Image 1: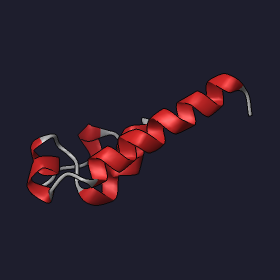
Image 2: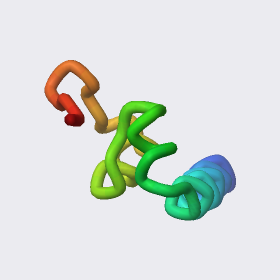
Image 3: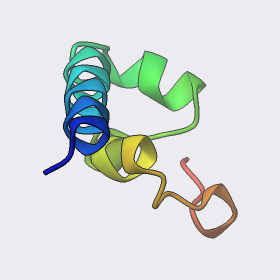
Image 4: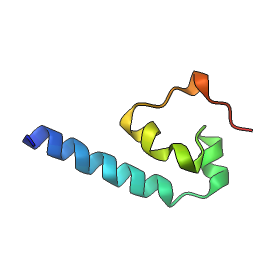
Length: 53
């Protein structure tokens, strides 16, 4: 794993950790649900395909 890849990994892990600390209402306000945290952080999240009620 290169230095850049390792740095990216740690930044993403920290973002996931931070988002997991938010309550469900706050997550909903920013447009994601708890089960979508990792895909939102990694960039695999497509807001057009998901609607949170």
